[in-house]
Picture 1 (cartoon, rainbow, N blue to C red):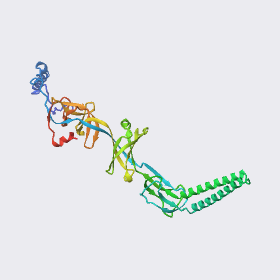
Picture 2: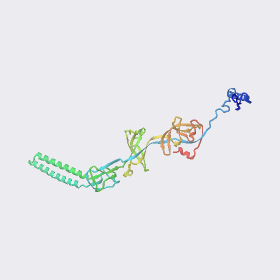
Picture 3: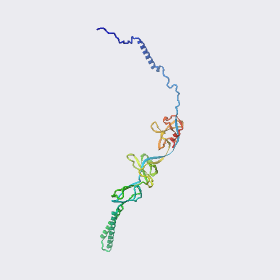
Picture 4: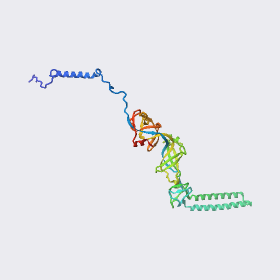
Length: 381
């Protein structure tokens, strides 16, 4: 077996001698020529003009939009601010004597007048001290009179008269002090208002300086708001204002005070508006919105939905000119209401696009149409 080579049984193909090998070369050559010809066709056979067959200066297609005619109107400018009501005056009432509460003359929530009795402290000791001081004053007066009589007869000296006069003055001071202590046993209201709090009852002991009541003066009622610094120049004292309380009541008011120093954190100024409040019916501490007229302007009433943004981000409104083309006008909001806004910056008469403004741009041709009944309300005040 050694030295004998086994015959090759793998059956390998020989492309240069096998049948069909020359045909593959021809096919490959033809494909290469076809590829080269296709790539060069752009030079040998130039492509047709892409604009061929297109009509020059074809008109733009008009977009249908809803348009509403609007005429500018006089708009009262109003500055609105949120705030709350506070009492015109507030005071805590303190006891001015020690003792036990003998009587209470009013109830919490009652209206009181200036000097009206609120409560009374037992005055037994103060009354006794006053009687004693009055008795001593009577004795001092008699001694002084005797000294003067003796001096007239040449018996008493000037020193004795001076001593009697001093004793009488001291007795008068003691009477005044005793009378004050007696008066201080009566707790009174410092001014007219409503008794907001009463902390004592009959039989309770109080000390000098102890708080026994609180009185609020809510007539007039003061409403405090904070206004931005850029609006301060449009306000003045004595100017009218309209106050709407959170309870639903609306009251006419007057600007009574404008702060001269801005809040360091908010950079706003304190403004106080006084509102008549007979019998202190409106309580203090209510949230309120104040509307303060600051002038007048000309504007159009629209819905915020008709506003658009320009290419530079400016706020504007799209209108239609006499050639039915879109015009973008920059506007300013001069007054905002719950049902719409007043804008300035449009001509006296304008055809405002109310529907479809988002699909057209400056200069685009449009086909105006009348808005529906619901759309009409967008530009009607």
